[in-house]
Length: 412
Image (tube, rainbow, N blue to C red; front, side):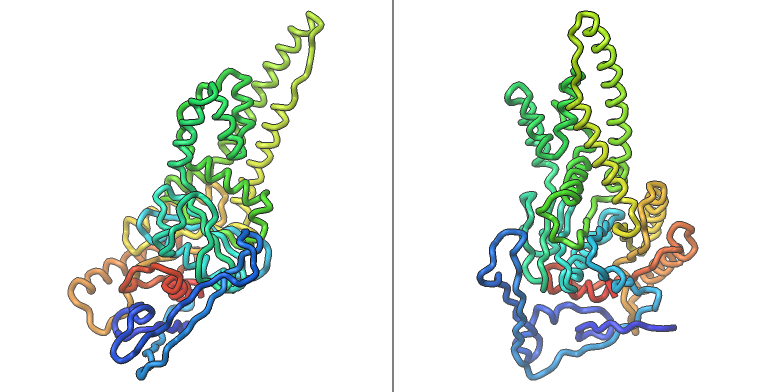
């Protein structure tokens, strides 16, 4: 079988090891010291801020042991194709909770940045773990520069709980006019205006179901239209577990249909009102609200087209080698196909690495994983996807050096 060689730093012959990236062993004084500093003379603004990266290595008596780990040719992720071109591209990583979506998304973002692409990684998961993955505080709902990569890498954790609090507070001030201000900040103020004219504004006093996804959609709209995000040629989404992700992807269709109904209702009401006013010679036209709503509808169509654009968007399914996770991944892919969202790759994470001698536990675990991997080959939803095998490593993947290590394993 054709093989791809992936160099892994390790002192163990039976497992992948990252300890040498961080911990001196034997007589080695240190493997590497990373220092991070902004380049002098640069502005802290998003458009011009650059991150300098340098590596200093102290000499040691013993060199690191490096071995090659063979991976089947079909495990190649096709990163050359993913990184080629300067056109903006969106990558959404999703799957069952606990399969390592955040680590895979963060490692992909680091890989893009190290290959010359200014990159933004966005978490739409209410239970954020990007900060943990990068070992850096990324909270606050604003763009934060990630320290370490060769090219600019920024992270954004969307904060739906903060948005809910703002939503509740806004509905209680200024007689409810704060709701409009809040929604306008999300780019959805015209909905409030339209609902207000239809005497339905009281429905906004309580955050509706799907607010998390609505906020995420509003951010996608900003990525499409705002100058602030023009510098990014790659945007990676670390999505919420399966159910939330599917609701996010279907939301543009839902809002498009809902806005269409509101516009029709508005037209009927306006026609009736105009007919009555014309009797008394007071006919007037009010198209501003309807025009704004129509523009929002056009923006939603643009977002929907983005999710389905095979040239600029790709959804990557992440799973682990268990029967339950593979089964859910199959259902996820079926749902994504129904939404016409392009999917090319399936990452199977946490696969036990090769071992010369297995303990009883490892042997049983490997047997279960083999059965789950066989399911993929026979599954009509998953067998057509490019299979990427990511090994189980012996430490947590935290910080840019570890993410770069993982990215070199996964994204070949």
